[in-house]
Length: 468
Image (cartoon, rainbow, N blue to C red):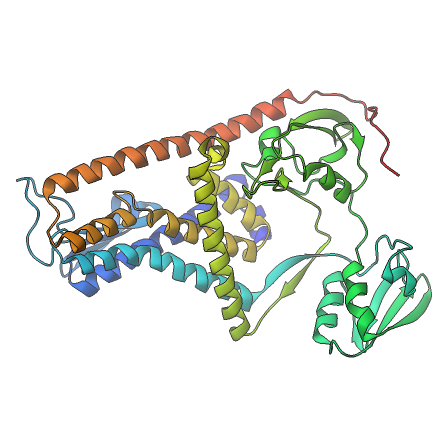
């Protein structure tokens, strides 16, 4: 998908993935409500694909099906979804608010459930069509003289070309082939060292400690990606920047730079950065993204990708991986929501709305179809989790009203319903104000940070030597 996005131009490359992603997520959500309403006998007055004025449409029975001008999802309008102008609740089982509470709860949960199912289907599709992983050449990096690999005969720069009778062409293949071999059997490793071809024999007991100690050649600390909204983004770090030092300590590899960052959560760090022949300093504050005590500091950057490995799996494996991946996403989203609620002043800056999602959708699309699809699955889970919150106006709020009605065995009064909705509007209004303020402010912060960077033409800046 990345090469297609590049050809669309900057504006279309930004808008198309965003419209496609938001349109799918919201449309699927509303289809869930629509099908559930039809199933329980509640009258649906309108099903719209898109928002705003009608573009085209037709009437079928009591429902108007229409395509509207703004292609960012859709909505379902049900009969009796608000008290009448006379101040009374609507009457009749085909009216939403007067329908028995089990049906209303089914309608409410059907939207989030549709998002959950969509996430699972999308992740299954990723497994079937191909999931990419960062890959490296099949060449060994540093081999310390105290390591199992060194004593087994491996040296830095060796290229692993075979494992038993299986040819090896990339770094990931080394470990995939090893895992598929009988763990109780020895292995023969084919090596190319310069012009020489060698073979190293490993016992069954040597295999696991040896392969777990292998490392590819070290990468330089060059930024290949900056995640939207993360500390590096707000600090003004850009793709292609080379970090030369952290707090004055020289760093020559990606791992050295990372080691200076992981234990510095919430502490300002001075990064000495080289960009297009200019060297300057910028300040970044790593965030503890896990919320755990002593959690690793992160600034939201990724290293260079030398190659990719594409894994395609059979249907059974894809379904299993999709199930596990969906559960992992659900846990991750709810954990993030809990962090935002428990530490709002710390994590509120990382709340994102449509603009944030649009930026990320464009980024993910440029990194491949599978990256975009995984992000699509994640946003489906996020929409599901958000809508299930027991907040008035949201689906979780409608479910809460159903629970109240089930417990009290009395219909909800107009007064209670209206007060409940007012509370929800205040809560959501406050939240949306925060989110919609964060989105442009995040971009402004980045522009200001980039604008503050000094324009030094020197590539020489004193830094402390790297540790021996």
